[in-house]
Length: 363
Image (cartoon, rainbow, N blue to C red; front, side, top):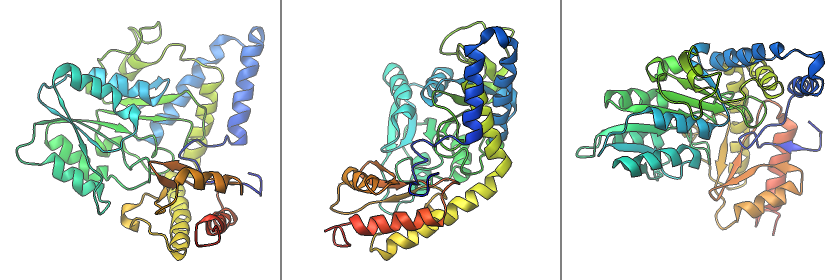
């Protein structure tokens, strides 16, 4: 990373490590010179990426499909769960659209009810969701579409507590782990989701337009988004959901390289480093007079800030002018460091915030 750049926007998309870029460039040579590279060289990369993706979530490679996006994965999940007329589809308010649209369609077509749990005043999504799951007199819970944290500000949604409650209610669990895989440990054996999806372009340092879908063994008899020669019988397991043109000579080697890089560092080590970064930032912004969510309610890798009376998009633009890169989401400032961020970056962010915040140097 250039010394003059502080890039803390991994939750939007990550830069490519040199090894991942090299893998993509090698793949481009395969496509550029197809006579020199047999097509038989490419499918092993697909399986290598599949195994690496499965390893990061504690799954078997046979339970993981290669798809084009998390939206595609959620659409497959929505098609694979039998609707329950009159049943509830549970989510949090202000959820990311790709987790909502397919299930909104299911609800409209089958007479199901969508319940979006409002943002709790105390920031404790987990308690609010547990209350909603068990609320007396509510329609029966059919599906919970959840994430391990709220995408806009990194507040925790504790699936270690929620997943057992959802299963006890007899409901299906669909997890969008976009903002978790690659930053914190994930274990499908512990949560037992029906489906779980994540892309490669954020925390696992890979390319765009590629994602992975975990399907529990009892959810592997559904329909893919499109039939193709690779996902029809004799394809078994989650490969039934593989996308068309699955064997991409550019994207799959890049994905495999990024996934293996992250796995080599180890998820506990990554989560620990990111927690130290966001704790340092939280202390710094509190010193500037800004409130942050309590530590117990913050995930290790995303810090969400609300700056009263300040337009978040305008603040992002002012920070960008100082070579500090973060995002604005739902009116909040979202700061998301990854492993490349060091103490100099953190100090630069805090100095830039002090310079641009009204009443603290910015007018």
